[in-house]
Length: 78
Image (cartoon, rainbow, N blue to C red; front, side, top):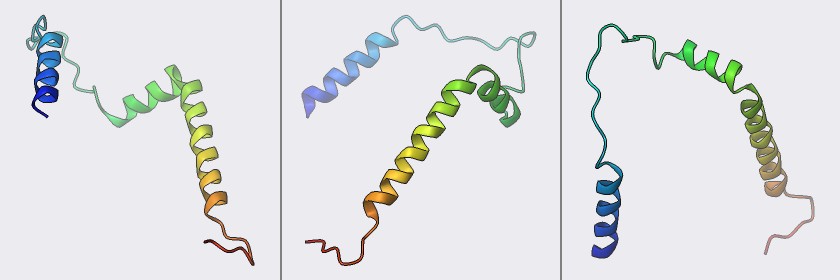
């Protein structure tokens, strides 16, 4: 337990050792970052194909889980 915590801490420190925090720059500040309409534009313009593939994968998983959980008449479950 202590070794895992130590290793996790060391990896975190090594990963963040050269990070320089960015300061606030009023000239390049964009207040629309993180807004829902910007997210939608990004998903449907830049990532349309991966978004659709993920939706098909989730639909197949949902149909599969319904089929696995469905009981047939006369079927005995243990």
